[in-house]
Length: 620
Image: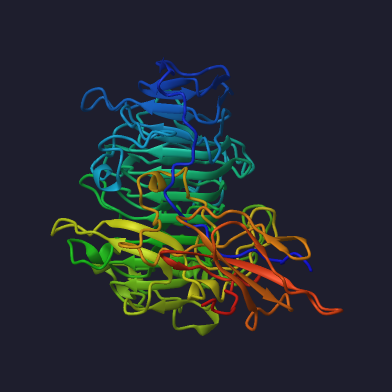
C-alpha cells in the first residue's frame, strides 16, 4: 500500500483566535514624541503611542518585532493636522516582521481585540465596530522610484512630490527623485492596520497603507487594513509588489493606484462596507499619470488572483457608482484570474476621450496599444495590450454584464468622457464571464444583514473560497514563473483549501469569516483534510482538522487518479486513524483519501492539480 498523493476534506476559514496572548496588560507605554533619526527596535513587551506624525529619517531603520502593538493619537484639535502617523522617509526603512500567530498591530488608543483578548465594545464584533474609523492616521512609506506626475515628455528621475494627507514637513514628506525602481523601503509582513485614516482636505487623505514612489525591492506581504477613512492601500507611482492584501470596510476605494504605478499584485481580498458615515466606492480604482494624464512612465500594473466584494444590490443613494474595476486617466494594467461580486453598479469602467473613445493618453488607447517589454519600465510577463482583462469572473452586478460605453456619468464616470468596452464579455477569447444574481454565488458564503434604509446592507459573514466544483475552479491561466507570482489554478484570491485571512486579520477576529453554525450557516462546509499517510499495510492516518466537531470518511481506490469507483472504508470516524482489513491483490496498489464532514455537511474529496474537485463515492 502507498500513501495517498493528496489529503482531503475540511478546515474551514473560521474566526478562531489562534494568536497567543500578547503582553499588552503588562506592557510599558512608550510615547513616541520625536522623529527617529537613528535605527531603533520596538518590541512586544512595550506599547508605542504615536503622539503625532512621526518620521523615520536620516537613513535609519525601524525594526518592529512580532506581536508589537503601535497606537496612534487622534488629531489633537480640529485643524491641527497632527494625528499619530508613521512615515518612513526616502532612504530609511521599516522592518515590521509579524507572524500569523503574532501579527504586528497598528491601531487606535482603545482597541483591545489583541492577542488572546476578544475585545470589548465596540472592538468585539463586526456590527459594533462599523462606526469606528478615522481614530488616528496610518502608515506611509516613501521611496525614490519613478513617479508619473508632470512628466508628459518622458520619465523624469528627478520628479518628486509631497505625499497627500500630510502637511509639508521640510521635505520629509517627499517621494520620488531618484529614478530607482529597485528602491528598498524595507519589509512589512503580517501587519494589521485598523481604525485609521485622516482627511487633511478634499482628495488629500491618509489611507490605511500609503506607498509613495516605493520600489520593487520592498516586501509588502500579508497586510490587513480595516475600518479606514480612505482607501485600504494606495500606490503613488513606483513599482512595489503587493501580496496577500486584505481590506474590510473602507471609506473609499479598495486598491487604488496612481501616478504611473507598475508593480505586481497577487492575492487581494477586498470586502466593502460602511465605516462611520462613509461607504466604499470602487473595488479597484486604477489611475494613470497626473498633471497631465499622459505623464510617464505609464501605469501598467499586473494583477492576479484578486477578490473584490461590493456593497450589494439594495437600492441606496449612489448605488450605480459602486463599481468593480475602473481604469481612468490613461491607466493601463493587466488583470487576470480575478473575481468581482455583488457591486451595485457596473462591472468595469474604461475611460476614453472627449471626441471619441480611443484618443491619445486615455485608458481606451491603452486597451488598444500593444504591450512591449523594454526591461526598464515595462517588464514581463508579456501580453497583447497595455490594458488587458482575461480569465476573470463577475457575479451579480447592478448593471448586469454590460460594460458602459459613451457617457457613463450615471456610473460615476467623468462628465464629457466617452467610455470604452474592450470586449470584456463579448470577446470569447478573453475568457471573462458575467453571471447574473440568479446564478448561485461562486463563493461558499456571502450573508448580509439589514442596514438603514438609505445605506447598503452590511455583510455579516463571508467564506470567499470557491464553491466545490464551481466556476472559480475552472479556466484560470497559469501564473508567470518569475519568482513573485505563485501557482494558483483558480480565479479569485482563494483556492479551495487556502485560508490566509484566518486568525490574524481584523475581519477574522471580528467574526466576518464564516464558521460552522448548522442553524445559521448550513453551507459552511469542511475544507480539505491533509497529512494522509499509510504507515503500515492496514493503517491509514491523517492530520486532525480544525473545523467544529470533525468526523471523517476514508475512501480507498486502486487508482491514484480515479476515486469515482472507490470504496468507503469508514464513515464518520471521529479520530484520525482507520484500519482497512482488505489487502491488495498481487501487483495491486491501494490509494486512500480522507474527507471531512460535520453538522454543516460533507467536505470535498480533494482537488486535482487543475483545481477541479475530485469525484468519489458517497459514504452512506
